[in-house]
Length: 381
Ligand SMILES: [Ca+2]
Ligand SMILES: [Ca+2]
Image (cartoon, rainbow, N blue to C red):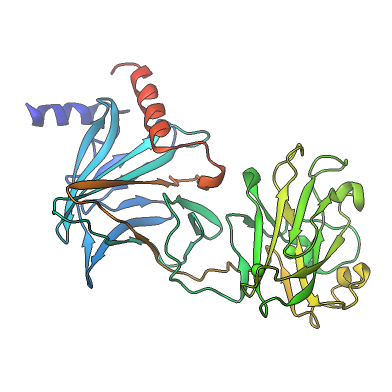
């Protein structure tokens, strides 16, 4: 009976999850690319695949799963995995959620501890080379591919300076129509309202002058992309680049910055003004200069101070970098005795990127409810 049902499901063209080769399960939705959970339980996407390892008391084991197709809430096609490592049992579930505009894959791990005392294993994400782990997300080539259920342990390489957020490099976005440094052609944008954040190592409590370069090349009229620029230790400044300098015209804001909290870093952020019609902040260039040094805007815009600056960043350009080097995302997870812990990862499916948790209204519960509602409303086949 069971075998017959599986074959019947494979004949129905829109039936996800049941038609793959033995041991692997595909995730799909009409009109969008498919993903799969392979026979060992790794979720395979167009950007790479993600798996897990567990470590406890100096021992480390990869998590592999027995994968079978299932229906969550009786209707949502999913891949169900059962695995065990280091005395813990782990159940996984992966399904496609109908999120706008192109869907998301949802991957849930439930780690259960059958023992009589609490344990605190280290859960490691096994990610492709080149994955950059951020504060609550993982990016590949500037595309946010994973939203993390909690902040990972910061045990990866931390560079002297870099972007530390989910903003996207957009090389060539700017089209300044006056002579200026080519850095104004490349930007980062905080799509969906994510802040553009940079961090620079300085001496603890050091004062520096920070110059931020902007050039608006989309809006022609003022009042659209209004942003707030913040540099640690200095009053924040509101900026509407078109109102201040005009469309396609580079401009500079300068700040008397200081490492106010003494952690040896200067924090820089550009965020959307809450009232702005366009909530995607942009940033074109950053200069760090000695405190009190002249910061003449025209000289900065010409590029003449790039070499002498303590630091010059062509934001979104070829030398731009994330503050975190490639690394693993590791989570310290305490599992209570006779209890369990559930973690939900939101994963970019083919062609899509995910919104970081700070900007996303989705939760594990609302994603499953949306998928369930859509599956229940789908015409019976
Ligand atoms: Ca600081
Ligand atoms: Ca730039």
